[in-house]
Length: 521
Image (cartoon, rainbow, N blue to C red; front, side, top):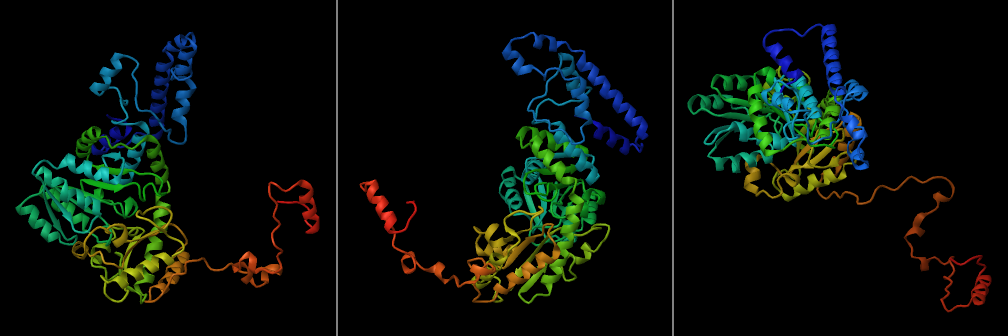
């Protein structure tokens, strides 16, 4: 399947420049007019108009594709949402041409959709990629990529700190195919070179920046080694986004992202992204058509719309995370802050290379509450929970990248079912907090975190009720103690008046007059 983006990539790879804007516009207009005339030449509409009521209800207004509808669809400012599962052909010759690759269109929603392709082409522009494939979620992008590119008895090299479900897949599913896994520290590039030069590997995969400890890898050097030793290099940039880090420009074959997070940016859609080398993407696309983890056209539109403000959102999130990291790094209740810009960060030297991270490191930082000084104690666990419960602005939740700030105690949300020895091996302490900055005002977020840290001290109790509302003038200035009394404890209230269904109307009126009541309830 090809289109304008494919033609552009061919021109770029051949060293050709794009045509002049005027010539390009003229060609596009001529192509559009040709298509409209082709549709207008169809006389099926006459048959529909002469048909019965049911036929008209099914086909009326839709069967004729040309004219103003076709032109307006092409001229619409917003990308149209092509909400269809099936694409049709006008005759057998078109189907043959489609199968031979000479007629550009779509066949079935599992294999492609115009709205989805528009999103893919937008991501290709952002990443500098030859091709792109979007799918139902970030995990779908990861699993489909690995199943497509790693053959039986293959060898995958990955880094220690990564999203738990990715680790779960490579350690429990891939071994069933005979795939061997080697795990290295994100900073151990020398170890990677030794592995690639002696054992070889099918694919290297790592997050950049890693989740949840915010480690940084040397993408440029790793990509160079992978190309030297014929190993596919795939980097997950969910955290930094293409605003902060572009692996393809640094030599990586592929870049992957959970578009659910920053790319969509509003916590209202799920999508995964894989972009890069065209031949590799095509290989994954074929498997994707079999497994069927597609993103629907409306979700693709939502991601595409979110991308329009990506740089605005990420710039603010960069600013918020940087300021928060600097604030927390000086606070006595914090044991450690994990954010690449800090000079004591273990990967700070790599992170400081401006050509790798020209704009920042994204909105996610993690830090560890000191508690009683023991990172594995119950008191440290409780102190961290008190801190999180005392916050007013962030939502407690397991995601990141949206306009709202989200926070989680990693031990609770991501590793609740994992034994202590596993958590110790992965450095998931009881005090580890992941803080995903939104786009709120920096000062408000820091002030909120500052007040919540006051509840970290042993013996602190987070108030269960909201603070009392300030009192107004007049009647509201009186003592509110009466609100906590029962009705019978208020002497100024008379006893309730009771009537029954047997009470006559005349008796009811008499009781009302005796008690100076105008009407019964």
